[in-house]
Length: 245
Image 1: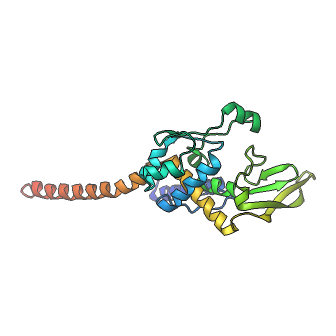
Image 2: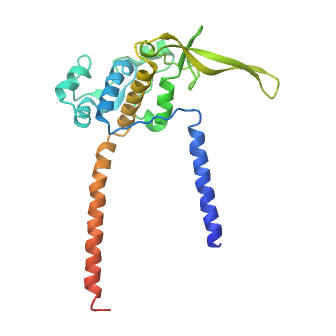
Image 3: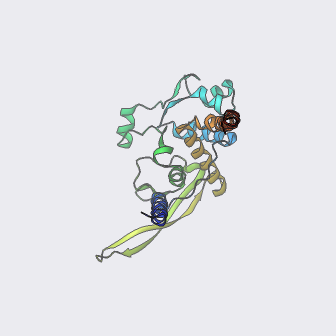
């Protein structure tokens, strides 16, 4: 196989990978999260504790880890984030009984620790902003007929669907949601709500891999060390071979 064929093969692989990545995130809004923005993570933590932990857990995360990573004191964590009789050393577990949750919602609400890794931040960000209300209750354009109601409706307000009817290839008529419009305003403006959901998404991204904050910071020093080690190895190489050559 010639170099030209190899190059064409590699380009095709790259194009295929790009296409698959685009297909996975098709129709989702881009979440421009920044897990190094401590203020954003702090706001996201407050939203998560107040709006998500009523039903969901983050069972692999301890409250005291938030103090360490989010530039908070343990006193601040205990005052603003730890609910009920829990302590800073405890894991972030919901107080809702699993059997009660299944009876109320038809399914036990999943743990959210790794959701950002399994679903992706774009999915979370779009999902949180895509609820709408119909005569049958809450629905969502990202996940149809979700078991989870729109717990953030008081912040966002109530959205109503704009629909259209279309005919498929077999001549069957269907109705689909083409857009959403705000019917009743919430406590936040649309811009502020989007910002809040970005903070919540960033926090969930952090929870899915809290080591990223230290790993990337440590990575800079590792690269500097490897660079210095390479330089010293080069000097040793020159010194060793100068008499041989």
